[in-house]
Image (cartoon, rainbow, N blue to C red):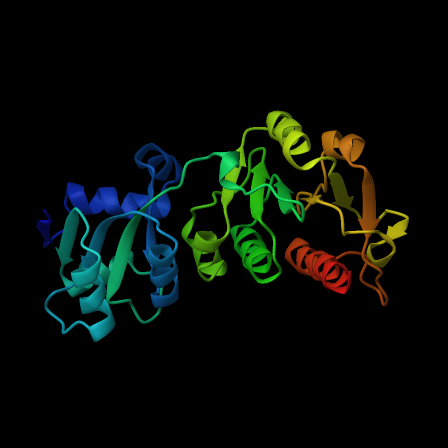
Length: 273
């Protein structure tokens, strides 16, 4: 049964919802976040994410898409807001007519499917939500099975991350673990179930070019922090470290750009085998 909650002012309920946009700790405690945009909401539903609530302004006429979502995917709570309050929650210049309160997925590495052509991206201590979201989009487009964040970094469910992923957050299993060492049990399980795999890092100071490396075996690709690169743990742990060949005066690439190039090379080699 759906409960209708009408909001006419910035009361405590509204402030709780707004805090999911601004406050990482509140998102984590409530295990929920706000999703905006037709594509993002469609993909959240397509991939089975739980909708805890809908937010909309009943004063305006809803499009057939928005009305259809409310009818076909009822949530426990429907929040009916004034247009001004809905505008305040929107991150778009032209506010959306429908926002969703979505439940976070569990932080379980088991969500990533283990198989013979495994390709997983590990992003160590990401600093930019835009980069994190863009890398998720590249993972989706270029065949990665999942994304794992290690160490302290930006929030996977920050509005900018969700927006930059353009919905790929909902299609690609993504999660955070506390430190690189927390992945060791999963590495052991992967070896047991699919056999050996390679842990490959990237660095502008490496000797081997990405095209010279064999990406066909099961692979975990490590991306380092935007400023400091990979941690010492990964540098010691990696089976290989590769670099992207650069010309001109640039000495490095934005990590999201580098990730796309690396994932493309992996896909290119695997399609050719």
